[in-house]
Image 1 (cartoon, rainbow, N blue to C red):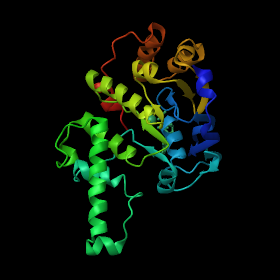
Image 2 (tube, rainbow, N blue to C red):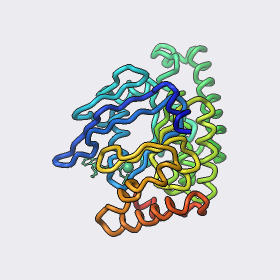
Image 3 (spheres, rainbow, N blue to C red):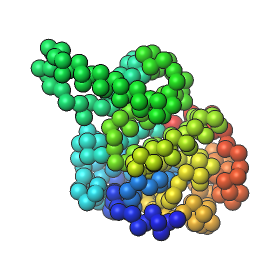
Image 4 (cartoon, rainbow, N blue to C red):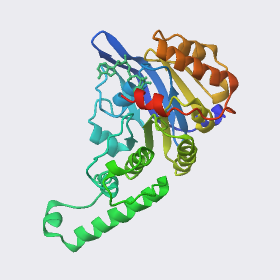
Length: 295
Ligand SMILES: Nc1ncnc2c1ncn2[C@@H]1O[C@H](COP(=O)(O)OP(=O)(O)OP(=O)(O)O)[C@@H](O)[C@H]1O
Ligand SMILES: [Mg+2]
């Protein structure tokens, strides 16, 4: 399976990516690639630098060294809006929705880069403006259908159940029609049924031809959905392979077990057990843990 994914063209290449905060190198010379249309998981213990790597790729952090290329074009250090316009959309480890806005408006906000409107049309409410508004609403509804949001879409997004809010964030990212979607712990805080639905959704997104790169601690989900897995530890890639290869890689289990604090150690042992026992385990209910973990 790995060979098949590797033969696809490279979509994103991060080379020697480094970002440091004070004395801590959160990302320490990270090199990895993502291919067109693949489902790639980025895993690693807490603090391994996964979110920081996403932040470098999407322009939220300026890397202190290294490069990011999207289809061969250098996007290093560009601002988040430009990187989004270039085709990389993302969701956040902590939800970042506009709580007071409606569900629909949150998704429409994801589309602003593509709407053909100008200030003149907007102020005068020209037919062209009304048409594009209607188009945006229709499209937002289609994305909400696609991700499976069932709640009232005219409600303030903060009133939706947590699991649906996560789906709205994914819908907003998809509304940009990205080449690549980066998801930071999409399963955190979801119950078993919601995780199963997420698995189906990730597959549907992949069928659109969009590359999906997800950071995830839920190994059941990771092992089922990923074509390839990259493992980070202390800001570096320590392994890259198929789920079967990663599960059998002693360096990976060691990285999880090597963390020092006690709570992390418990989590690491649970994850390591999943590695050993494989994907047949029932999906663990991470609700409380995950809520605590969300930064
Ligand atoms: N803005 C920041 N300022 C200071 N330190 C930071 C910042 N962002 C990340 N770090 C540090 O960088 C390291 C990597 O953090 P990061 O959030 O990238 O890890 P992670 O792999 O996403 O972890 P988790 O699985 O817990 O989300 C940690 O030591 C963290 O404390
Ligand atoms: Mg993180």
